[in-house]
Amino acid sequence: MTKGRLEAFTDGVIAVIITIMVLELKVPHDADPKALMPLVPVFLSYVLSFVFTGIYWNNHHHMFHAVHHVNGATLWANLHLLFWLSLVPFVTGWMDENHFAAVTVAAYGLVLLGAACAYTLLTRVLLASHGKDSPLAKALGKDFKGKISLAIYVAAIPLAFVQAWISGGLYVLVAAIWLCPDRRFEKLLDEAKA
Image (tube, rainbow, N blue to C red; front, side):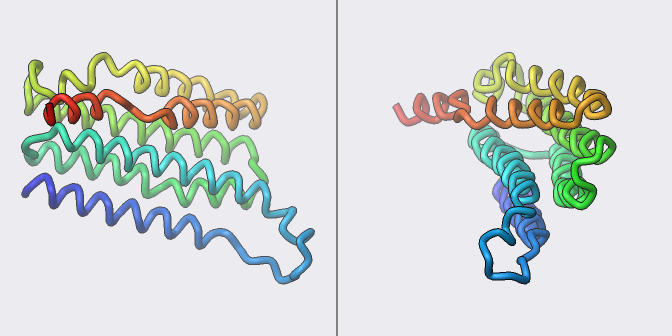
């Protein structure tokens, strides 16, 4: 399989994930703008989940610019990532439906942690097949953002049982960390053009 086919499959799955999430937004049966007020928390959790899904898509896209080939291990690692991302609409909906109950906020964090671990595993699999001196290895560097994200998720999950909004704030913090464009791969692309 070519890397282009893997990227196209990943793009398709992520598009479906986003579509499923938006379908969870229920239209109010009243034309009064006040009818939208109960939907504010649902909409905000949708935005957060959309941002997380978009961050994974964006980083996956950038990373695969430095990938030269894929193998069977890459395919399985990529499917592992897509498995966790495919659970995002479910946990988002569960959290919304139960008014951000502690167990649902923790489950949301568990899925985010699973996706982060899967992405880390995908990078390790790609590094193993491309070598320590490859452009991919240079672009990934020490992956500080990835490591700090894992640590924040590990802290946020049990904190959901103390105060759900603290966990929510930590999830937003991780999203904010990743919203800043990851220049590692863009620098690599700029060097290749020069």
